[in-house]
Image (cartoon, rainbow, N blue to C red; front, side, top):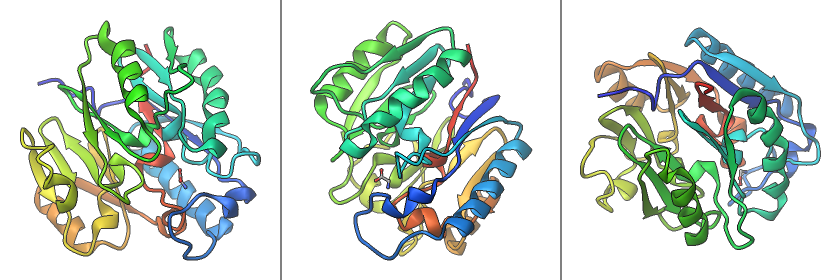
Length: 264
Ligand code: GLY
């Protein structure tokens, strides 16, 4: 089994902007503290570097409050990158900001272009054998279909699924741990979408820890979820905990904060 879904050489991040206080959120639990978010972001970048990443750190974009969540702007695959069309109107312009960055790194960059197509990277889980895409309030059937057409000649099979109701993104509730294993909430796994994978369940009450990232031999995991962390450590993963309290206030997690890839 190959390991291209979690072994990478590069990551792209974007610094949080002061406009982060206007970041989208499902439930208002208070504004993120920018200074604390910046410290967490620095820890996150240090952890990626320690895992072997060359990290391209982009400047903050004041015009886009949610632009620290770069994952939603593109899908990076071994054969090339695909620029997304975010379904949140305030985020649509973020994708165009990412395109030239990826064009410098990849020889092939494709785009979701259909006027009716919407898709965000947070709804996409790439495994060794398939690309799982959850339809959500941000990702529609047209977006999934256009992505499937764009990556077919690269040999990728797209499987369309449904993000649980009330959950922002598909990957809010799951993460790839290795070629055979996902971390998942029970509410998502109950749909049967991971029946061909080994599933490590997130501990009850710790659903907010389902979004983590495997990068080479490291697992970046949000701090504050000890029972799920212990399950991952017991399963043999090298867990690095990163503070996520401020991103969590605007529904962001570990995967949202970077694009991870090996340029081609
Ligand atoms: N605040 C992250 C998002 O709604 O996209």
